[in-house]
Image: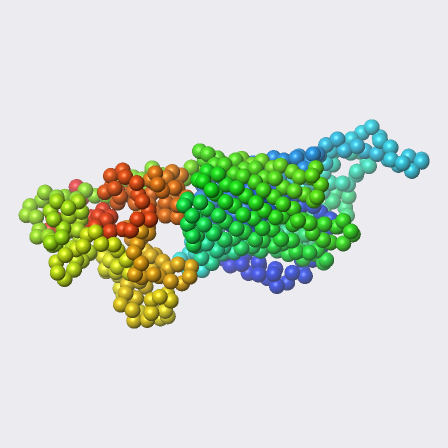
Length: 569
């Protein structure tokens, strides 16, 4: 299975870049209108459809199938709109995780009724026949996407998502009579998409849309037997930036701000590239505000051109549902502006009951009254009544957390990043090796903690910043320390959480998932229901308390107290 999926990854990447290098092969001059250009969901429409690098919900089916790999549970999207006061648009998309990937299905339907059928009378003027017709266009899409981190340990593939669409087009007139004979048709094509995370806040996106030429079976055929037409092939490229919030270089309270810029490169001769730009701002946890620019083709003067259309929108989340609204301008006429409404079901992200059970079972009770009690390491500045006395003494006796040569521990002293690296690496007795090249600009070769920093970074306990610095002497905040200890402890860390871990920690806070996992696992019981204060500097006593509650440390403490290996009870 893994070889097959790796081949799927490789095939899509190769075909994608071959398409970029041999774009003339796909050149076409089709007159087919792709209704998938509009029926993509209100959220991306509010952002000018600039989401190729950021899309991670059901709208990925229409905009970049690779983004669907981020969907980890059942998602449903619906949208409705009325274009130009006449054309009814309806969109439905459903997706769900399957073995080693995510499967999705989308349908877009556009239709208009009451089209009068006329003829030219003997005076050369149009005259109604008294009859009318209806026109409908439908697009069906089947999507499959894979997240590289689910199938490979390769550093590159873990940052890559790929996906593909199989699309079927259907257009027809009804009740039209002989006047419109043959004005119906069908066809199919494919899309190939990819997303690549350059780091935690920069994502590249790309999509080869309508990749199959007519000779390869793609395109659209009319029922009157005319030759098949190639649906325009487009290369969509974009970059998504998370400017504020989780995984971003800056935090502004609990707010999030994202920017995406895309371009559409048409292979058809003479058609200009089109640009899209969009901002999405979450000022509070459940409300999003969007602004975008969506360029569209313009042939007003008989030649290809483009027009800028402003877009805006809002989103509201509640109980696993998302309600989105978008306003999209089409040209300069006010009556061409359209309002779009979407409702999505994404479910509430929670650690499931099985995971909670596993975490509860991973917290064995420390046996404290087994005699004879071993002689524990004590410190002059950690009296018997100190709140973290026992955890400090246990870890010191086990050589997990050392004191100072003068038999002091300094429990209220802060913990620097390099000290945390050394502590976690020594606790697991990880091998120490010199890096082949300089890891960070502020950790010079031969620096005393270089090997500890390398080992901690390799295990994922700690990381540098986007500027290439580690800041080894900088004191850790509570949030940073808990994130490191949660990874050290091997806790089950959800992608996102549906509730605030603490009253002063929003579920959208960058370390909310790690804090939530640590709280569920009992590592933060010492706070006793108080606020978490995520930006407060962490003390040595707090770190000792948290580590002593991990499964790794408790097994060693139980062994110490029993003078024997742990046994089943």
